[in-house]
Amino acid sequence: MQTLQNKSPHSFCSARTFSTEVYQSLSPWLDVRVTEMAGYDYVFAPMSLCDQITDFITLQEFLINIQAVIGSDLQRTILIGTERAEDGSLEMDRYDAVWSDSVIIDCHRTSLEGSPQFDFIRMLQQHSSPLIDE
Image 1 (tube, rainbow, N blue to C red):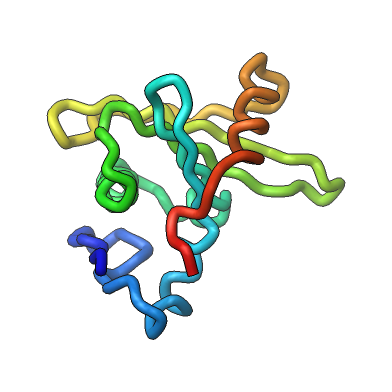
Image 2: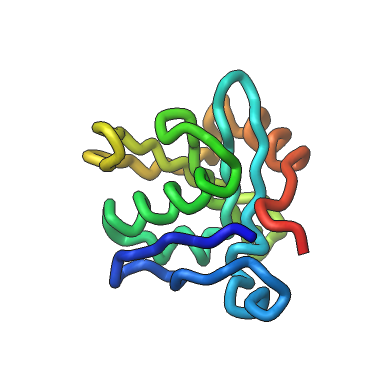
């Protein structure tokens, strides 16, 4: 079994053990998807989950928990928030975190709408796998 280590009072997911009893409390985590490409791990999370990331500590805890599950390196993980607009179009935001050792010292959230990366990132999302299998 794998355990989420979460110490921040601002985090949106308490420390839990992945088992069938806690799937309901971990439901936001069940929508997180990952894929690897060109030396980076792309993490796709629902925008509703990403919107709860309001400070560097929460983002740091979120990414460290994901990296523990996938065995990734802090520097090579890219978080992408995704959601469907009312018209059905896909909206994506990219979080570019700057790490110093194991601490985030800066982060920029950028919409990918209209960017040259949009189609590439959408393709990665379509080929991603669930972070946690039910």
